[in-house]
Amino acid sequence: MMIASMQGVVKRYGSQLVLDYIDLDIQEGEIIGLLGPNGAGKTTLIQTLTGITAFERGKVELFGQTENPFSNQNKEKIGLVTQEITVFEELTAKENLQFFAGVYGLKGEEKKKRVAEALEFVGLADKGGKMPTKFSGGMKRRLNIACALTHRPKLLIMDEPTVGIDPQSRNYILEAVKKLRDSGTTILYTTHYMEEVQSIATRVVIMDQGQIIKEGTVNELIQTVQHEEKVKMDVTDPESVPIHSLEKIAGVKKVIVSGSQITVISAVHSGNLDRIISIVKEYAGVLGIQADKPNLEDVFLTLTGKHLRDKGGE
Amino acid sequence: MRVLSTVKFTALRMLRSYIVLLLLLVVPIILLTVFSFILSGAVPESGVPYINETSMTQVLVFQLFGGSIVMSLIYNDLFTENKIRMYALPFNQTMYAFSIMMCGALFSTLLGALLMVYSQFVLGVMWQNWLWMIYIISLMAVLSIIVCLIFTFSVKNFKIAERLSEVYGIGFVVLAGLFFPMPENGFFDFLGSYGNPLTLSMGAIRDMGESNIGDAWFQANILLGAIIILFVVMLILGRRKIG
Ligand SMILES: Nc1ncnc2c1ncn2[C@@H]1O[C@H](COP(=O)(O)OP(=O)(O)OP(=O)(O)O)[C@@H](O)[C@H]1O
Ligand SMILES: [Mg+2]
Image (cartoon, rainbow over all chains, first blue to last red; front, side, top):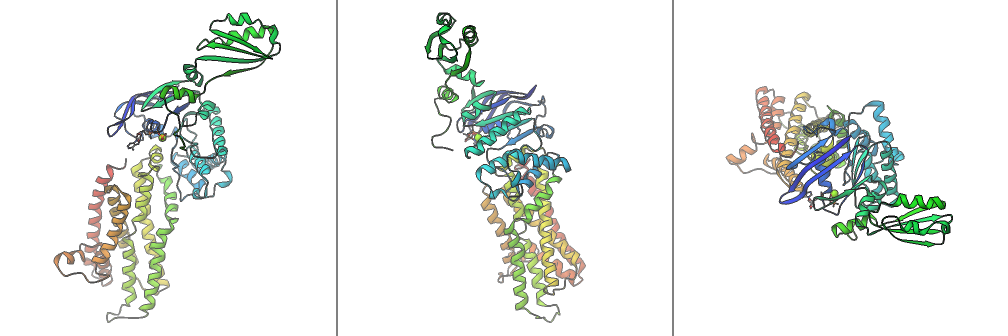
């Protein structure tokens, strides 16, 4: 089921084109990693997708509705974790969550339960009575996330939820996102950290200068930039594997045996991994497989000529 | 009405704005106490102790500054980075702004009433007509809120809007001639009488106390009229900024 979609969306700030004909579909259950350097337009994309900012051309569809996509009924199904920390400083963590839970229509016992759940979820269960001004940066970030969770959104949009925090909080957040994914939440996640995207995203969308310049699974993207595929296998009995039959597989360039390890190097897009493994398995036991690949950072660099993060930033 | 669920938290935020409480409650209490010592028991020919008039003036003067809390909450929630979250919420942002205004008006009126309670039960001031006094206080509270919001909506820089709201407060105190006498000409006469919310409200209360009911209502109604006109101005300016 389609959760959200943008078609030909154009947005300008003054004369600057910030969204340049954006097309994006988000299917139920997807975790989309939206990657892009500073100023690419990620936050603006999120703001147009949620109806916070007007756009000049194109269409946005939310939960199957194009006529009035930004109705309160639809907004109730969305949770937005803002890039900046937007919690009330004069309210305790718990009161902050109660505020948002109330606006999303939760009441009484149910509200109480969800608030406690959200605090627990971000690891602030024992800090509910504290003011966010007393929190560390990471704790504020976690509260900022919790504020978008009490109503159990169908679509969760997280705009750089891990920026500027300690690795521990970061891991906590990533684990939390995985839990949400497992419970069926559709997630749009923007970040500068490609390791995060690599570990959670089912699909990656790369933006630069207001355009989506590439999208696909992590593997698909990586394959577009790599020049060869390398498969390393630990096998029980390398001597008995007929090297020449591996070499005959389409795309294979080279087979190297060293110790208990067989390395097969193929041309890009050979799609021969299954063939290779099945041949090896006929003659020996496979103990481990490792595909040595370039990472998303390389993809990004190749596509944009830029690094994901400003040097020294964040 | 999802906005209703936020009222409790708006009230909490107001009660926890300690600087506002300090300026609008603690400072006037201290001033009133000091005045009551200075004026201790002084009674002019009219028979009404000086402290009565002073207390009434104090209570009303501080109402001129009552809009600051509403202005800062609305600015914080709907004009800074926080607005992104507020606009993503499934409620009517304009209604939310109104709810903050209502809370603020109640809050200011409550602070005014607390000052009245303090001056009556601690300093011995006798308020003749509590209801009338509270009605006038609430008019002053609403007026101050509307004026502050007009500044917030019409000036780009919030710091400047805040300064302007202070100018509104201090300006009308000065124009009322409370610090030093104003020059005598048509312009200053007007701004020291019917053109000044502070003198209007003081006049309304004085006249009610002297049973000049017609005059009292007349002055209160000028305040009400100003509120209605400025409210419309505020709506027009605010429409471009909220919603
Ligand atoms: N309110 C605004 N007024 C004018 N220009 C804006 C506004 N918001 C964003 N921009 C511009 O639009 C461009 C895209 O900004 P956006 O915040 O969407 O980028 P981003 O990809 O989220 O960047 P970052 O990684 O730094 O958060 C930037 O060049 C920015 O300067
Ligand atoms: Mg951004």
